[in-house]
Amino acid sequence: MQDDAIHAPLATGSAALIYGWTLQEVVLILWAIYVIVLITIKVPDFAAAVARIRACLVRQWEKLKRWKDGPEN
View 1: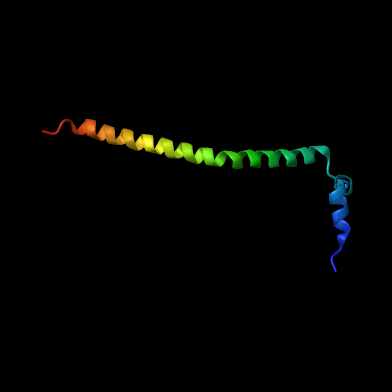
View 2: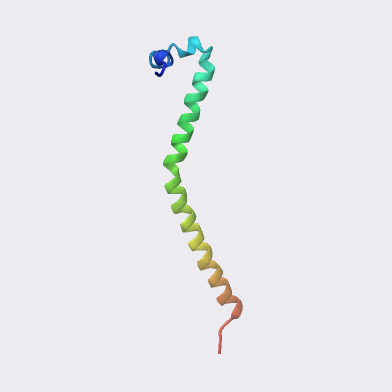
């Protein structure tokens, strides 16, 4: 049988008192969760930006190669 004694303090918020957590530790944990959520939200935007930058670099490289080769007669 599973001991349900751990669920009560976690559910009621008294875990901070029982396990000795201070407000600073709770705030740091919440801040870390917030940062992870922000990063997760921005990942699709970052992937799209990388694709645009890569496409631009490929176009510029091809343009430079054409300029370097000069007009072909």
